[in-house]
Every structure is written in C-alpha cells, then in structure tokens.
Length: 323
Image (cartoon, rainbow, N blue to C red):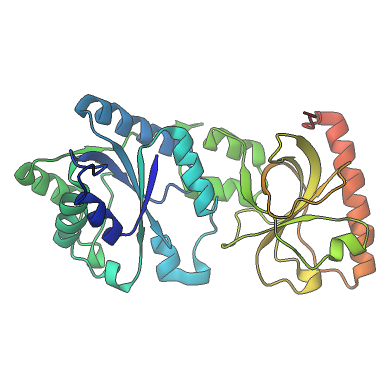
C-alpha cells in the first residue's frame, strides 16, 4: 500500500516510468473517519471493480477534513487520527491512499476543474464509487449527475455506494459519534465492526500522574476526541502485551489542560514507554471528566476510579495477556 500526499506528488508520480496508476484506478472519495461497516462495504465495492479491471484501488481523503476547514473548533470530533485511519485502510487491502490538502486553493476548484485535474489527469480514474449525495467543487456545484455525464464522455464509470444498516438505521460516522457521546461503547462497536480504539505515540507529559502515584502514558490528540471522560481500557504495547487500565480522555480541566489528550494508567506495569505506539481499546465508561478543586481531590478520585475499574474487570473479564 502507498500513501501519496498532495496533488503535486500525484502528478509527479504519474510521469514516472513505473507509475503506480499508469493504467488508471478504481477510486472512492470521503473522510473515512472510523473506517466503519459502511466504509468497509465501500472498500469492498472498490476492491471488486479494481480486480475486475486489473488496476489499483484508491481511497481519496482530505486533511483537514472539509468540515474542519469550514467550521474550525466547531467541527464534529474525529473518531480516529489520520495515521490510525491510514493504518486501518492499509489493513483493508487498499492499494493507494491519496491525501489531498483541503485549503483555500483546493476549495476554489470548480466541479469540472476537480474532475479534470484530480480525477482524470491525476488519478486516471476508470471507475468511481461515491454516494449519490456526493457534492464537490466550489459552492458544492459538482454532483453525482455531473460525474456520470462527464464519465460517459471521458471514459470512466460511476457507481453509487451501497447502504449498510444496523438495527434498521444507516451506519454513518455521525451516528457513531452520537452513540459514543452517550457512552454506548458496545453500540459503537456494532456500527464500527471493531472495538472503538485510539492508537498514538506516547509523549512526555507534565509528570503529575507520577507525582500523585498514578503514572500515565500520555498521547496527545491533534483533534477533539469523540469520547470524553474516564474509562476502563485495555492497551496493547509494541511488544504485543495487552494490559488492563484506566484512561482519561479530554482536556484535563483540573490542571488547565488545553490540548486534547489521552492519559492511560496501566495496571501492574512498571517501566517507561516513551516513544512507543499504544493501541487503546475503550471497554466501559466510569465517569465524566470533572474539574476538581484541588490536586488532592483529584488524587482521591483517581484511587476510586482504579477500584471501580478493577471491580468492573473482575466481573467482565480481563484483557491482559503476557508474552
């Protein structure tokens, strides 16, 4: 699988003797936030057609996501960071992920400009899988009908995405964010097709957890997360060990946190994990994120959180494994 960043790099690659898309591709376009059951079905559609035509499969995504560009901090929270999304698409078997920068220049594309410059000249698209409500170009003037009309003229076909429903409702990232906001973690797993997890690199924090006897592995999050609060988690280390623990995800209001972060305390673990990547699965909600009057109050609550988490694990099973 290959990651191509930016239209300039895409066009540079197309001029090489062994260009990855020399014979065109089958592509789809979207945010793919969460890579949920609906996304997985779209990927299956892309795979099927790519195999039939003997060309690579491509997923086109944007950074920032369009709603983040237009709405800033008011944009919906992300279900996963970009790298985790890329890794999930890698696991799905997609051949190429094309990540385009969504900025003022890109948003000014006309509908026809996007088709000509990106889809035809850049990707050499032979088949496109998008929803019939897909809109693109300046002022969202491009639509499914325009794609089909131009495709008939320029030699590519366009297919509508298949709808996936769970419990009678369409699976979507918006729906998943909604159930996560209500801490319905099991329902989110049903819609995702996999446990809700966040993967990221452990960085140095303020060492407050270590000072109060509850050391944590800290992962900074580039965007506001879909969950906020304190949770029972299981975490997979780079060496393959899976450990139970407690995680706080959010802004850490007691210590005036401003950058979203995920702080994970691993039970029965001693050592340092700085620089490693941690895979954190959320299992059960314990409480909301709260601003305490003092660090001592926070310390007392953390002790109660640990007791509550261990009690929940005792009743529902541990995920911990040793290599």
